[in-house]
Image (cartoon, rainbow, N blue to C red):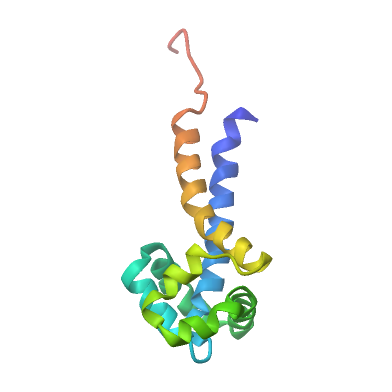
Length: 137
């Protein structure tokens, strides 16, 4: 099992990245505040901007995924929409400095999961056990 830990971490990286791409890719489709949050992400949060760029094409191609992502974002950010509408330049500050509900906490956890699992996969890959041969054939 120790030999395959880097594969487990790699699979978790791909799964969490796909989730973030689908959810954050639906950000521009949110009514009223979507574009302002996306603009704030481009200015202040390169990871969020990457998720939006990766996921917007996928969400545009599959409307079911876009509806799923928009629903998750509305549940997570719903309590902060009024403050974001009043000052859209601090949207990413509001999103990452306060926690409005459990869905928001989950979204923030999943936001940081892909970089963590990528780093973990790289570390585990470099530390994986290798076969040692005593005699050459």
